[in-house]
Length: 261
Length: 248
Image 1 (tube, rainbow over the protein chains, first blue to last red):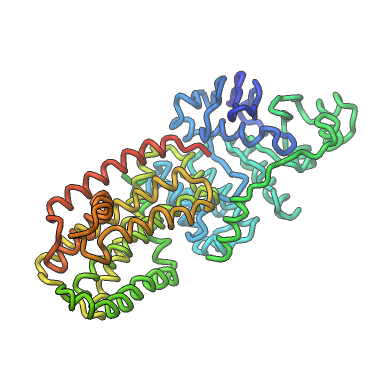
Image 2: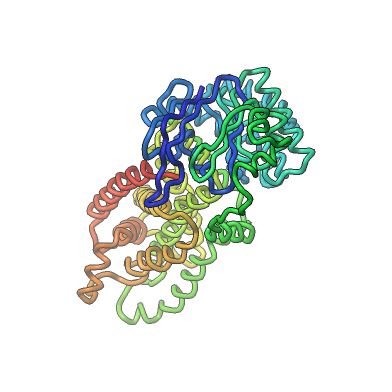
């Protein structure tokens, strides 16, 4: 379903992703792991046509991502790390906006939006403004939205960030269900290793822009000789805490957004 | 087409739902109208000019449109920072459609705001010189809206966060306004100021509006129309290029 061949991404003199290659099979739940700043988000951005690789090729559902971005875009749905809903619109309006951007006919979205809202248990909130939603509700709505145009692959970039264990548990149940029922390939990142252990069929670990290990959770435990994935992960990526540049601009924006409502 | 429509509709919904912002944005034009209008009126008349309110009203309307249009364009930076733009950029639609939808949405909001201020000018004693020219005034209003909404969009495509925002206000929006002839007649100006006002696209908007509303202008309306349309085309082309380059 996804094939990454010798992909490199450079930002001026910094190499964020360094000659990585791996493949994700159809119907798989694939976990893409790595410490902060390892190249996870950059890889997802390349897979989802938001940025172009400096070198190498990516195929998604048979489409060359850089040469055929429009066809690629129809084949995947994505839940970004930061919420990407319009707070000033209702849940239904956010869904409708997405449906129209993806060229769904009115009959089609009139059928699919209620169905998906039902799936993520937001039917009774459909006419509420998203700004009044909790973090978990926003996530659920984003998942529903990501599935609206019947994608073959669903990307989830740290979907459980900042959610309580109940909501996380709920969320993964939906995703597991979807994967089983509709055969959607799932590609996700997270820092919660127990989630990976529960849900992922296969894992790739990236660090300093390179894939350092891949296989099933069991493979990785066996290779490192650890009995849980968290220890195995630390064994592979080291104990040092990674430097990450703070985004002053973003914080500033969050503050002004709060002030101006 | 549906893409442009839904982007436009989103902008409009956001505008209508923020009542406080609509009212807030009317504060500045009202202040200009009453403080400057009544304050400078006696001097203006002594200098042999017409009623200053008649002169000032089109300028204040243009000012409102300028500020509103650029702000709605710059709202894209908001979308960029908070992720909503990503949702639009990963969708199978062309960047040009996104840009056009945003521009037209911003322009519609600015036009509505301009019409509101037009109605307020009546309270200050302004009366249009010739009612049959009102459609022409509306056309100028729309053109100014599109021009500056597109400009805001282009600026937003370049900027990544709101840090640059005061820069836009102080080095783009304010100079455009103050050096446009919105507040003073643009004939017999010192040479430098004369050149600057003639290079400022807003001058043509102000003059066009003034012709249609107050019945007199220094720049012929046909020329204003031509310049505004030309600049819009150029900005849309630049915007198209800028938007195709956005990587997040």
